[in-house]
Length: 144
Image (cartoon, rainbow, N blue to C red; front, top):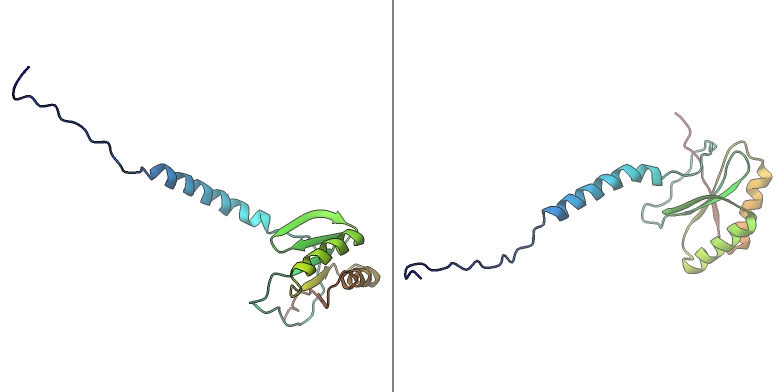
């Protein structure tokens, strides 16, 4: 062996390579940006026009009971909107459970303008029977 030859020992690198994590985060960001508009869709209804006061900005997102142009009932609970048709009994059970957990949560009815008044009243009576203290009506603002 040679006297002058010393073998250099490599120390292990104790750094985390974050480049793959950044790549994954960018891909997730793009996926969420593409899917966000799809998730926020609701039931398509033609709301009646009326001037009204909007809900306060600091209030919780309302529970929206909807009636579409065909007379089918839907329920939109904040971020989760199940697009399945419900009957009045199912709506009463679900809204009653929500109101027991969050009594201050606003509840509004969103109905197509072509729906018979009777269907709207039936929904409002069902909601009040489920324990909702007051039911609001959702409208579009009138055009100037």
